[in-house]
View 1 (cartoon, one colour):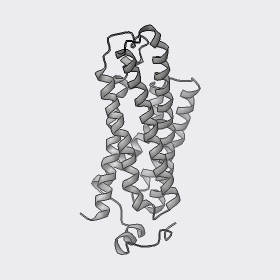
View 2 (cartoon, helix red, strand yellow):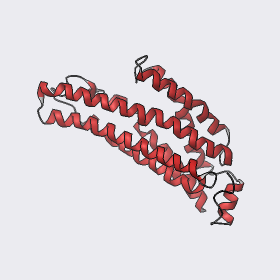
View 3 (cartoon, one colour):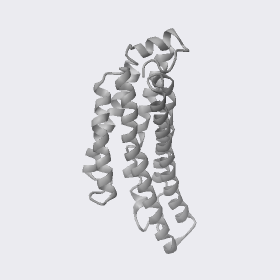
Length: 233
């Protein structure tokens, strides 16, 4: 397996790992209860959800690190933007997980009724971090990486087009949630996120199964390891 094929498999694997957090809405259900801080728990579901989201955060950075050496040959500035956006996404996930685990800490510390308001504030912080890290930023990622892959033809162009279509839909859905037009866990929210989810899942599967398509970019990478990075901008 050559280096480009390995890169594709690693990146694709990281993309598929980002889907391990699908059960978090159910896992975080108890901690959203206003009386959670004063009740008996349970805590395990929150810890499992936090672990799954932490895996997603690592996978987000992993996708960017794995793809950067290849896509930077198309446009280094956009590639750096993609890496930065992925790191921001991971950081926002970390903030959200820390907020919910802090609610568990309040309950275990016996904060009682005095901790109810603080617990609800921390849940609200998680929601805001989720809107930033797992709604707005993924739309930006789709545009940045979609541009690089569309221009370089490293994957079938229908894949980044799916990301281009999904990005504005996800932004519109996120804004609607932020202004109170719909709930974060509603069917409309799921529908707004579906195209981006399909883009990332399809990209992950393609990279694992097929790898990068032959293109001037990959030819240059294989033939001349030190080729100028501006050659295909």
